[in-house]
Length: 208
Image 1 (cartoon, rainbow, N blue to C red):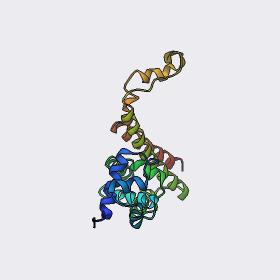
Image 2 (cartoon, rainbow, N blue to C red):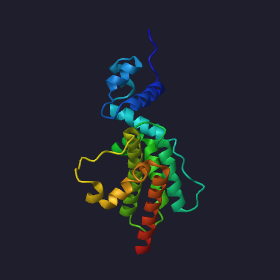
Image 3 (cartoon, helix red, strand yellow):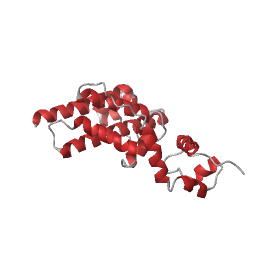
Image 4 (tube, helix red, strand yellow):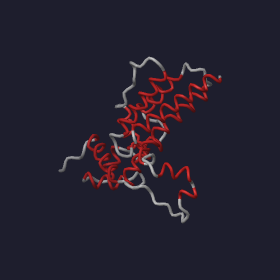
């Protein structure tokens, strides 16, 4: 009798499959086939694809290091943002998973809670603190998703508009001719975005 794959093996094979497929293409049937097990056996370990995805998010979230040594809320947000992005780079489609699925697993909830803790003492309403962290996370996720798309695309997209871009959109044309478009997925672009969000929070605090 063949030995059934362990839960850890199912997790690792799930990441391997996500390296090849999008979230919509991923299925429990395809995963079971990859593992050489029946779908019903796979469902013994995970009741649904959503339950499996929650486990993937939970294990990845555990690896995100909280910047406890940073003294200011600005530095903590900045470094935590970079640490989140680093883990997103380690797992295929993790950014899309965390974008699509709300915090429900233990470690994902802790991640959200620690972010709220960073801004808890700021002179903002509770609603605005929650909006801030939601925006912060969405920026990180979309930055990683956009970066992946740029890597897959390799070249600048060709415009289907017949009018020369320099005539139609001269300001855009200036950036189109430089490296600005291809640098969107760079660490410099990402860190600038984090600093922009933090500067925006600081401005809101002055207004309040």
